[in-house]
Structure formats: structure tokens, C-alpha cells
Image (cartoon, rainbow, N blue to C red):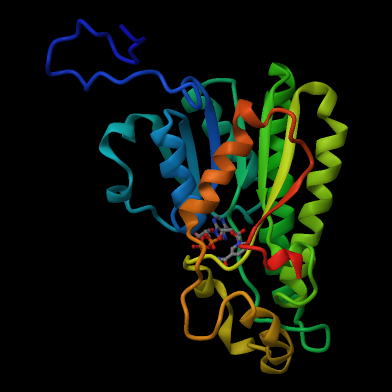
Length: 278
Ligand SMILES: NC(=O)c1ccc[n+]([C@@H]2O[C@H](COP(=O)([O-])OP(=O)(O)OC[C@H]3O[C@@H](n4cnc5c(N)ncnc54)[C@H](O)[C@@H]3O)[C@@H](O)[C@H]2O)c1
């Protein structure tokens, strides 16, 4: 008889019997940006593999999107990660809820810019995009490291972008924030590899999510976008939905967090249907 997550002799009113899933059973993950897109898909995938998940987002979550059988292992915190002290607060909340162990940090929350180039970028837009996409993941890493060091084990996955390795995929602020996130990834990977902590990045192409809602459209830089457009068209033709799903990205994040990826540290992994080879 296989191991059971629940007591096999429990009366029939108890939850259904489920085998232990070695991917996530007994492990805790913090997932930022959990209310939408890649963050929501990652939350669903991790929960389905029996992780305990602390999800955080500035927007409320639709609990109907969380499978009832997983709800007991999910805690949602609504908060603006840009606010002072918020990243540390998220980790404190996770520890209070699930105990002093954090196995995975998935830095997923992010915003898109309006393709502004260096001639028109405003201070506000620079700070909004750099803060959300680069400063917040860095603060989250700083906040979880004491717990990962204590266990000599941990996996951090940063969601960067094709724009982390290309100057032709987004505006100046988004491009720079994601290039910076790769620096954080590599530095963290090497610095803490002796302490059992891994840090990797994924570089998705265009994904079918709600990220366009985060574009401040009143500042849209048409001139800059026109220069980027031929490169975009090679990957995501006008009028077509992005062909990469949030679930496909979530599955890669799950793999990078798993024991099967324990020798993978410091990589920047494209998920872009070969767009990155151009
Ligand atoms: N959609 C794409 O084409 C694409 C491509 C490459 C990389 N990415 C990256 O994927 C990640 C996820 O984006 P998505 O496409 O799922 O977009 P999304 O807009 O669907 O989800 C992003 C989530 O982050 C949350 N968020 C933003 N700022 C926050 C803050 N200050 N505090 C807390 N939560 C905040 C949003 O509320 C939202 O729920 C981002 O880092 C993005 O840069 C997206």
C-alpha cells in the first residue's frame, strides 16, 4: 500500500486519500504576483504538488481559482511589495503560518513599461519599473536567505524575460530591470552555492497573461515601439495571442525548484520557442 498524505483509517468524512508527492510534500514556497498570469499558474501548480504556498499580490486573489483540496496549504497576503518593509513582512507572515522553513522563493511579480526609450523615460516610470522588477526581487531574496542558510537548502527562481538578454524586446526601464535581475541571479547563485542555495532565472518570450494592464499607456512610446516591432513580429505576430501559456512557464519554475534540478544553478533559461536564438 502506498504512503498516504492523510490517515488511511480516517472516517469517510475526512479528505480523500492522496499519495505523497515528493516534489512538494512538506515544502514551503513563497510566490510573488500570485493573483494573475504566471504567478497564479505557479501557485496552482505548486499547490497541486502538495507544496505549502504563501502567495502575495497587490491585487486580491480569486479564491475560485484555488482547488478546494489545496486550500488548506495556501495562505494569501494582499500587499504592495514596493511599500517599505513589505518584503520582510511577507517572509515574517510565511514563517508565522508555515514555520521557520522556506524551501522556494519564486520572484514573479512584475510590471511592463510603455516601450519608452532613453529620450522620453520619466523618473516616475523608471522608478516604478526598476523598483517592482529589480529592487523587490532583491529584497525578497535578502529576506529569505537567513532561513535557506539555516537549512543549507533553498531554491530561488527569478522570472526575468527575453528582455534580460536583448535590447530589442521592451522599453529601457523594463529591459534594464530584467538585465539587472540576471546580475542578481548570477551573483546569488555563486555566492551561496556552497550553502546549498540555488538561484536561477527564466527568460520567457511573450506569454498570454494580464501584463499589458500594467502598461502606463498614456506614456506609450510609439517611435520606440515601431523600432522593436519587427523583432516582436518574428515571435508574436500582430493580432495573434502569445503562444506561450502561463502554465508552461509555471512548469519550468516547478522543475527548477525540484531535486531533479539540483545541479542547475545560475542559469538564465529561455522559454520562448527559439526567439532567443535570433
Ligand atoms: N507576459 C509576458 O509576456 C511576459 C514575458 C516575459 C516575462 N514576463 C514576466 O513574468 C512575470 C509575471 O508577469 P505576468 O505576465 O504573469 O503578468 P500579470 O500582470 O498577469 O501578473 C503580474 C502580477 O504581479 C502583481 N504585482 C505587480 N506589482 C506588484 C507589487 N508592487 N506588489 C505585489 N504584486 C504586484 C500584479 O498585481 C499581478 O497580479 C513578470 O515578472 C513579467 O515581467 C512576462
